[in-house]
Length: 370
Ligand code: IPM
Ligand code: MG
Image (cartoon, rainbow, N blue to C red; front, side, top):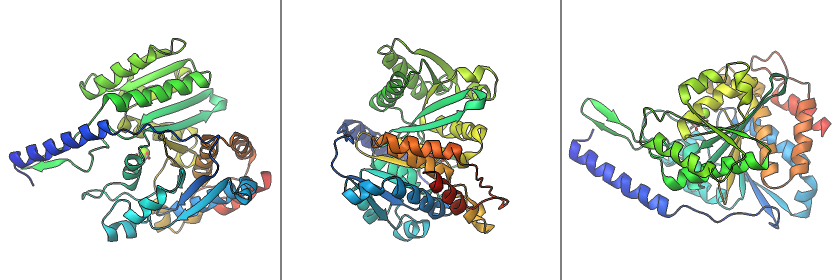
């Protein structure tokens, strides 16, 4: 518990740190089309993490076998990002694990359990910040319903950047939300570039700028500033509440193509979108920065599935899709397409109640198709 003076001191420190963060934003870019060896780090995580990560790794190992043999791809298995080890070290990502991660170019990461309450930050949030993975790209596609959405969620700011740094005073608690010019412009640029390069003509900017006037107001304004460089793309603003409804509204929702939004709204709405696609177990997620990138399932570590002894029935499709996104990111487009086609063709289903195939059985069937 703080008194007002201590809270002001804490806030001052936060402001100074954030100013320093803006000053040091990384711009060094990795070019994967020319890089001699691309190192993929594999990090298991907790709960169903090791189960589904193992299956996704089998798929990558098969698709990249020749390149692994030739040395143009290296796969590095990194241990220690478990909740037990994180609690024991009292670090969201133990320093030695982070050092290992930073020797890789891209990471395939299983879900990690986030302790709630306390001050321990989520491993995801730490990794996104440490590797400056500012763009969270989450595709949702339901061809039979004419839905093809790509969410661009800002991934390093908003409510997340100081989510573990709020203050408690007598009878109240305060958290902070931060939106910066540089942080907004780079995610907006990434979304518009994606739209332009993929023949998309509609982009929605989603905020709650009527209420969060400073932060979301800035986000909206800067997105429109960047939009000026992309005359072929129609930009519409929506508030997050109505957008949540609109994703359920037919046929209106068919017009959405690229959706650009701050961190927390992006977190929430992409679970909704994934559910429409068939469940969070079907959705992969790319966390992209200029230098590093990390690929993961959209969902968490599913501790309840583990408690029920049903871990083997976790759907690995989310992680395997993340693997396909990883392949695309490192310019292995042919391998990515092969994998996506095989996933579309694979008829084996995984159900978390154990009434169908296990993660391993699904993957066996998928590997047959590769
Ligand atoms: C996600 C997850 C994370 C988030 C959690 C695990 C911290 O929900 O990637 O969407 O809130 O970003
Ligand atoms: Mg989420």
